[in-house]
Amino acid sequence: MKFDTYASFRIRGAILDGLRKEDWMPRSVREKIKKIEAAAEKIEQEKMRTATIEEVAAASGMPVEEVGKIMSESLFASLVSLDDDQKT
Image (cartoon, rainbow, N blue to C red; front, side, top):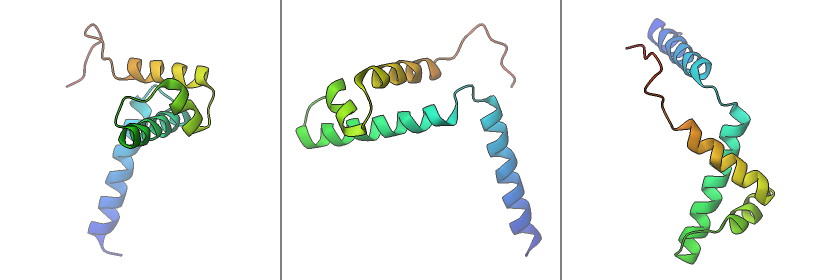
């Protein structure tokens, strides 16, 4: 194995580990968010309108309450506090 190949593999792994460490949301929730977003996108493309939460829940195989909860969590995940100390 070439050193370049080994080094790039290790650097990529270290970057991913660092990103996961900084992420406060569990991986399982992130996977559910992706599943819900994919279902919503598919419905919107098929029906040419915004998908309802009931349609998304049925397409993703989750209860309506869980879909609503996960979507609200995903909104909070994208917010950044202006008061937090940011490392630059």
